[in-house]
Length: 233
Image 1 (cartoon, helix red, strand yellow):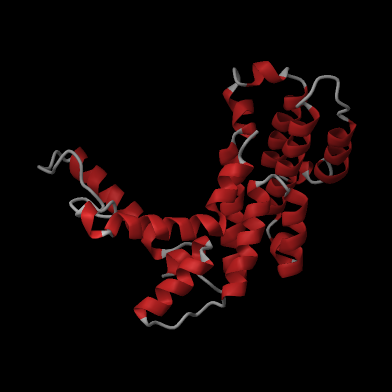
Image 2: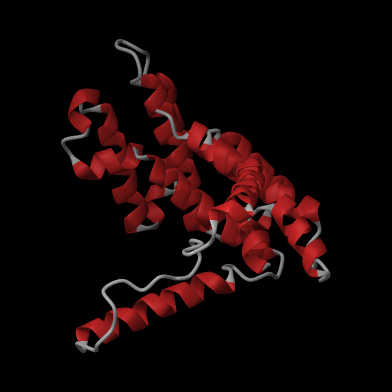
């Protein structure tokens, strides 16, 4: 249940609580607020995401300077992405934003300055050569949006007094660590150990697969579909 709530699947969480006959501790509207912020980041609309975060709780970014800088840097990356999408496009908007929003913050932390310098390098390298430089290519990779969105989600949850991460994620990591240690110790364990979440051995004729597919569609409708669409560069 807490996975659906923490990861932002309001419809699935509401349905699960109803079918399991358990009370919901978080109102659907609170989950939806995080979903909308996450989707804005997935779509590259960082300004909207920042505004929504400040509307929700202005102290989140005021207290977490690293997260605020990461959002602003991502906003700069989106500006550079737009500026370099077509030849001979004016890069002045990106330069102005970097000067006004990031340059004053960069000297406060060595990591900030390094991140800003690497980001500005996107304006120097021709777009067709960026993929040849892994550090620069990673800035334009959709996974950066996902990483920042996850940090934002955790920060919002913490500000609301909730767990930053669903318990099941900790359990999965613990299980993976245990399996790794067992293999390093050359214990006699199967080559592959299933988590038991893929429906192995389920009779396809009993309608189970269709039910799983419907549940996935509910979750996709709460953000994942938007994530995939927003990642198109």
